[in-house]
Image (cartoon, rainbow, N blue to C red; front, side, top):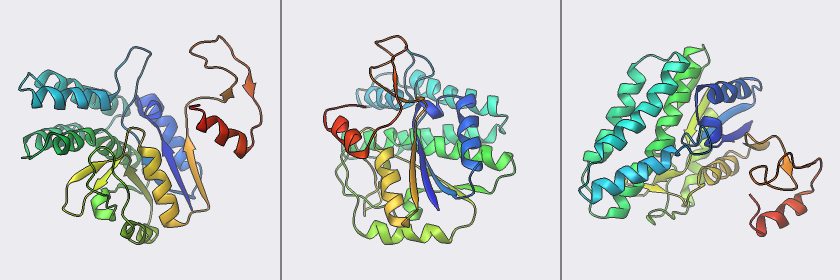
Length: 255
């Protein structure tokens, strides 16, 4: 059994999502899939998570948030249309977003986490819907239903110990599980997020809980390069790195 995770750039548009689904279905052991919110489609694009943060901030400041919310829905609608998915998924996504906005809250942090988490949550619904439309036995899994419980530290949550036993039961589910990254639930039932980049954390938690053979963290970059391709044209690819070397690079801020 494998857990695999796909980041925002891999979820940015329909073409990328088709690639993701092709990777998923190419290996029957890829049973649990963690997805991020749609990322940038091009250099000056805006990530869906940043759009959600903007929407939440505008709402909290009593400014016009509708235009941003509509832009977010339009991003998902474009992906769904290009994937040939039924319109009902877009209506479900819009209803999901509007429900999150309309629910009561007592702190800005709680409201922000609830809105931010919509990016991954609806991306997972979209991927599951597309796989099902292709005849693949797949289902969306809500973290609350799976038992992913976190500390109530909004924006900086930590996994609670009981989550691992809860999540281990996912092994019993047939087919492919599409699991949204980045967030879980507090014991009181509130949406709580990890820090930015938290989908990686979700993937590692699931891999540990399920005691999988392999945790695969996919990226759309072809290799590890000696320099950033954004700064240097055609940098040389590094053909081999040890785990220790990669760890040292990560400590130094390499990403």
